[in-house]
Length: 105
Image (cartoon, rainbow, N blue to C red; front, side, top):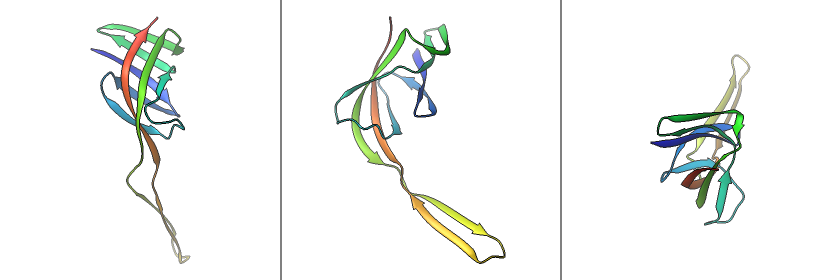
């Protein structure tokens, strides 16, 4: 089993080939190839490579499938005994990326 742990937009994802992941919005066109080069760990069927902090020899390529918005999250702020209440909704902009290949140079 081949997988990689990649840092994308401040978050870390366990990534395998053939699966898709919802990342924070990446400003690119649909169908475009992207490369993820901040690879922290790479496991090639038991052979583990760990970066310090990143692995320069490992590249993850993916394809942008669609741009979408996440489900609504409710942000509710309240100060007790002050009659202060603030209810706010938020929908995160996301990009769905299909991981096609994890390659090592």
